[in-house]
Each structure stands twice: as C-alpha cells, then as structure tokens.
Length: 227
Image 1 (cartoon, helix red, strand yellow):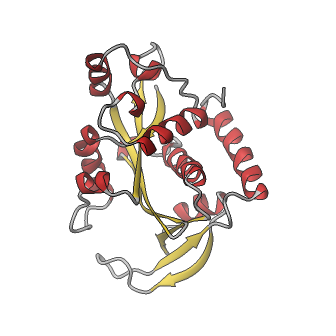
Image 2: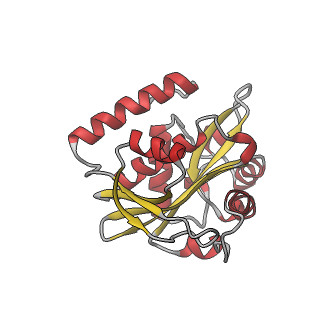
Image 3: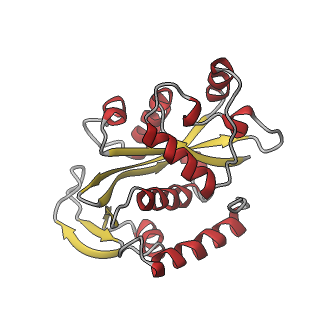
C-alpha cells in the first residue's frame, strides 16, 4: 500500500469525522466539516490509502480538478500536492469514473488549518489509530506547510499538549519553536498547551530545510520525488 494526499471533499466527511472522534474523544462539540468546507479561511487535506500493486484510476486523474463543485483554490491545492507527493494526474474521462474512483478511497488521516492575517493556524492533525507510525502524520504536516507556502502564509502555528513530547519532536523537526503557553487550554484535563510557530516559511533557509526533510522522508517511506 501507499498513501497519497489531496484536498478534502464532501464525500470524505463521514470518514474524517470518525478519525476525529477516535483521535479527540473528549472534544465537544465535534467539528462541522460540512461548514468548514464552505469556509474560505479553512483548508483541509486528507491522506488516503491506495493499492500500489495496480494503477488506480484515482491515481491517474481522480482529483479535485475533476470534481464539478470544487473551488478554483482547491484545484490549485490538488496541483500542488501532486508535485509534492508525485501525483502526476490526468482528468478522468467521465464523472461516473471519477465517482467510482473516489468511492474506493479509504481515508486514513487529515489535517486542517485556517489562514488568517498571513498565518496558517493548524486546528487539527490526526491519523487513524491502526495507521499510526507509518509516516502519515509527517506526510500531512509536510503537505500542510507546502500548501501554506503556496497560499502565501508567512508562518505556520499550532497548539500542542505540554505532555505530548512525540508530537513536539515532529514539529521541531519542521522548524516549529515554542513561542508561548496557554494555561488550561485542554478542556478534558485542563492541561496546558505550548504554542509552536515556524519562522518565515517562504524564506530561502526554510525552503532549503524543507527540501532536505522531504528527500529524507521519501527515502525512508518510499514516496517518489517530484517529477
């Protein structure tokens, strides 16, 4: 199996909601992903599982660019992600074929962020439990940063539990540093959160680091490079 990233669609809502409930069981109310998909500030990406023993029609072209109800911005995101994670995509010959391809996709993770005042604020990043430790979370984070760059964000920021050292290590790897602390941020146990933020992601130094991280990721997890 291999894993690919694309913009979230309406038909992904049920699967993404299940992943959110699994990853954040105490979060209430649950995210209204239908509303988020209509929110121009919100941007969501999903990772889906694909059988690499055969070329699926989805890999050949079933992306947001073939969907009649997606925005022009989402088409741009799809184009970006195909460069990042190799999806050299062609348009499907018919809407029926596209619908069949989408129907076979199993969503295994998602990330969402809001773009406000030039800053991409990650609101959630989660992987389906049985798919953790396969590099999917890192793939989503990497794709999120790439997309934020394309959308002209100056920086990426997020909150993380002070006890979640594993997540903090991943964020630090991608240039996030602690810039603040929110007391009692999490409602389930009133745990504090660290605020972590990148430097300017469009800078030459950050882009050089990101390119190195991307190559190292590809070597480890077998994801092909840019065409």
